[in-house]
Length: 148
Image (tube, rainbow, N blue to C red):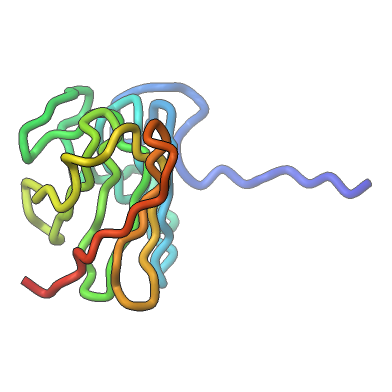
């Protein structure tokens, strides 16, 4: 059959915390400019990797530090954006969804108390955040999208 090799566009095949390394990346989001947002699970951070760049920039979390403060993440697994360009981070280790605005140094929890091992998320056409909640064996909807 047809077998093709992928092209390395982020990371360097070695786990690490430097701006050019990742540690167990889980989720990705690609914007219209081909910028990658990577849930760097093992480093507890979100990396922004501009197309063609050698290094990434940490846009959420503290590299290598797991925590539950508003500026920290604990095993992030997914990223998505809403229509107002807020970034939503599935912070699985803290059983919460954090909303971050570009350039901010902390997030705001928009869903948490009723989640246990969230694993996937997407926005529906009405701007509601739909979440797969693994350990509670369900799909839940949160009306979180707003401009404020």
